[in-house]
Length: 191
Length: 396
Ligand SMILES: NC(=O)c1ccc[n+]([C@@H]2O[C@H](COP(=O)([O-])OP(=O)(O)OC[C@H]3O[C@@H](n4cnc5c(N)ncnc54)[C@H](O)[C@@H]3O)[C@@H](O)[C@H]2O)c1
Ligand SMILES: [Zn+2]
Ligand SMILES: [Zn+2]
Image (cartoon, rainbow over all chains, first blue to last red; front, side, top):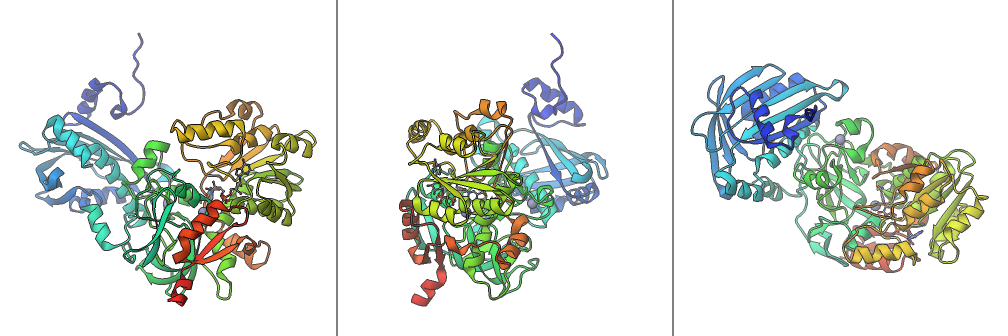
């Protein structure tokens, strides 16, 4: 039988063993669940990269990230909302970086949610830039944790999809769309 | 403030809710002076549209006065504006192509999941039309928060009555876009299914675009009469057989373009329609689609089918064979309202398009539940209900 491999992104494969291929792309792999998402943003590559590279700004569109502290040039400390009003924390180290093109990271030992991944920025001609997030992670406390996370919509796959949409909204329109009518409703939405 | 809220099938109420506030830089708050009930609202009223929640504020056809603006709004307090029912950011790829109802950014990120799952890609936000299209509070209220107010609302010059311009918010551009999608050529015969507000604006628009004949189809004599006033030939589907009549009226050719302005709640005792109704009521299908089937079968070979009518889910017995074999073209979609506003406002001001003929009832906002009931139950006489929150203020 001929090799059935195609040109589709590895993160869309139906075969679980292809996670290994994805992992090979990451310099340092942490975690076993794989998420991949792309979004096209009508802004120049350099501008998007610069916004993302300032990690302290990420909570502006990542609803579940409470805070990112920059420790040094390569290290940052992440405080992330977890189900049940708790938080999960870890340190992340940049494993590879190419200006205007790529940011790759991995969490360090002892992370509450071991994770690693890469954000690629690719020119899309008239349409701006394609931003692709590839994330490997271990769901909090195994399978049950994943089910609970899904229920509370803090599941990384759902979160990544929504975060990328919000990043696009912020970069293209200068604001993040909300259907709330009052400040009170808006607060409840983000909480 | 007071607002018309949805609580379930055939249950809408006027409740007191918190006033809207400016939340984003490009927002504006509009004090509503006129707001209409739409055929699309009847789909909500009848419980056909999923992802509604009790307490949702309805209404997507509204206009009013600017009372508050965010720092990035281009509107000024005191201006009168008509607000498009489609919410669009003006800066994404689709907005750049004037495909405003396909805007990438106006639907909040969390709500986009629903439409992405159902349709493959999420569409723009809409006012007062379920959570799939954003969950935005609608305009059948005293005040509305209008996002991206620098892109959507069109400023109305002083001295032009609300009733003349209110329908720029939806049904006039919808009828116009539907006629444009029918790619009418001089000498064409155009058939329009449904003489509701949308169908009637299709009739007017088709003539303005050079159609030689328009055949209007409905079963309500009063609505057919309005179509006749604009020069359409009428076809009452309870009196006459639609397909047979259309074939004879076009010398055996079929209409060059067919417009379905009925939608997912087609009336009539047609075999396929009855079958659809049974399926809808037993939850094995979602839409009643008689009119679009008939439009495809009647349409001449190589003709154009335009479908402004709203469908939400899945259908079967779609005549795909006829569609393919005859080489038809189908164009459809939620209206790209913003694209049409300047041209249509000019046409109204020059007296080329009449909109006021449509309004049969003007009521206070507090009477909105009654307005829904009569628009739903007495379609022959009730052609369009316009709610005026100001009438409550006068009465108070
Ligand atoms: N595409 C858009 O952006 C957009 C915007 C507004 C409205 N709409 C849709 O357009 C459609 C019409 O809106 P409206 O406000 O005119 O609604 P409406 O309910 O007032 O009018 C529909 C008309 O169709 C007639 N009808 C029913 N069954 C028929 C049949 N089998 N053959 C011929 N006529 C039939 C009815 O008698 C009625 O007069 C609705 O589906 C609405 O949701 C779409
Ligand atoms: Zn409408
Ligand atoms: Zn847009």
